[in-house]
Length: 509
View (tube, rainbow, N blue to C red):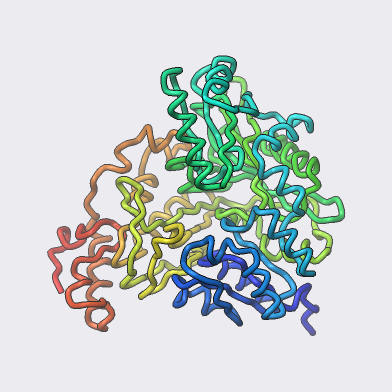
């Protein structure tokens, strides 16, 4: 049987790393040509090699390469790409890229510019949601000075959360508990937001201190169909950035009725801004004796980092849905067709000090990823790869599925123990501790989980099994001559510390 004609002939991904490879994979499955873009720092990157074509777009600094709209459009024209997928981060939520695509006659695989503008400005998003009848966290939308912030805080009531109007990724966010802290926190948050987003405007919300972070995945077409694809629990966070995600939420108060209510609110939010494509509505989810309350936080107008847990529990390829919708096709399924099967967990693996969560870029000498049924690894790192200091230090997303949460946790624990990363420190020890911690196992955790469990980031020693796996991989790297300069493998790490595996096994090269 002949393959149907693909909706596009060639797609350029205006991004790098694992998300670029993720999009290329779906395109290849459906006969669509692929184009990578790369900077000086990514000349030897896996995402460059994974595409059919690759175009150099500039220096390592993002503003000279991945954030340059002109260079992205020029690369698409040079290669004849008829569509651009933005991935996440960089230009993925910048209306300027959407407008540039329209001017160049190139399809943007994402929502319309107006929806981005409305939901990307947190202040306007709150106002839009309030008019649409979507519950929002009580707060004040406009803060001009630290004095106006103090007046607003007295009105809202301490503690309060300062947020950047153009914010994201935890930047420009601060919790303030007392009046004496407010002026300094306001100025610091505004400066951080100005540096990160070019916009120092701030707004304020009541700080909900015992809430979960639960989000609803949406998919919408241009024919009026909007569906929600269940929820994701994203409450394990450091510095307001997600580290572990799962679907469904383990909260005992996340019943089918509550899930449907949240989903319907998320659909209402999307329809209020004329949304199409993949998007996520984030909520604060507060458990209570009379049932939960939930409040709109923001809408992410792109594919999320944690989308694999949704794909593994509902059986859909969200990137393929994005591509079809961008080409003008109907979604092809409705809410009654959406399933929730089993349980999925994702751990974000970062090149970082697992005790302080500080980035630790460098050369990866040897990699061994886990494999087996219901284990998924999204990565752009292999033996010999360099984790660049210029970009986010995430090196992989490890996602597993199980028929229930207990089985998924067990499978994730084994997958992490089988993972070997020599040459860099990673947060694998942190994840292993979380998976054994009683409150996490029972689903009793909120966005303050890491702060309330300092033992998760205390100094550690490897267990014997992980240490032996590290030593074996390091020995293999040395015998095959892949350890870089002499003796380097002997001082490298499996992702659990600088020399922890050596102390545990007394192994030497």
